[in-house]
Length: 405
Image (tube, rainbow, N blue to C red; front, side):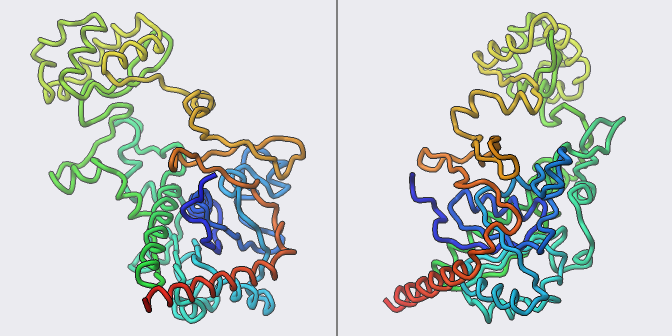
């Protein structure tokens, strides 16, 4: 196995549910040692979330299992003197502190930025919150759907008759987690160059808006507010979901030559010279008529046949799959995207978890261990703290020597 890029990086993770755990899961896949600090007897709220009530009762709900493989779990009560002392010892040995409390909560617990810098001047301290720790909305509570609504995402999801609609998965949580993982990686590189720690303040709302592409840029650049178009791509036509003989088919004929190829293969070459469709902007104006004609032609054959033929001719297309169908695609098996681990809550049963789609020098990094039971590593707490402190002291000495040279 290759050395992972974040091998030796120690992450103290105070986060719950999704955005924070998704961030630390990405860091773990890249090699970081992640220790979850969980409330005694309760733990991460995600432990009780998922479609299987029995797993939820046992503290290994599907939502927790999906984001926490490869991590360690310590139960600490930060109101307890002894536990606070151990927490501070861990902090001195940490490279990264990650939390997703509401703004000001960690300060109220006695661990504001100044105190953290006193404990560890090389610490990368990252907060993930709905709106960031500054500004008039900093104290407002936030969940994924709240952010979806406030970013305008829901206003452009669905059709003119059905919008606003929620996107079918927690996209703002995962976007916030990805942005945090990216920022932490950049801050660690910055520390390598300067020796200085960083304070990272991640706003899920801003991170989500930054990923919305044309929906934001068309308005900022051209003053054109986006409208909901359902399964259609507003930037081109024909580009969206069409109906084949046995089900839906996505086609993205965004270029002129792709449009012409699609028309010929579908048996409707007359559309190429039709004045309503012959030019890009005209096709967008007359999208409904164009789609009607194409759907009639595409209904003659199964979606898989069209997918094969159109792709071979350079017209991007693919069937619209269910999630189970998507996860069973041979492409994912080839790239080792899904890893099978031992199920922590069901002896003898497998647990499948996803990777991140990155091959590093040809290798797909996978979790080295299953998600932890609550407090699974409590007995190692003192040893862990000493090991982290020793590693941090060694790293600090090496950094000083490098700066001196």
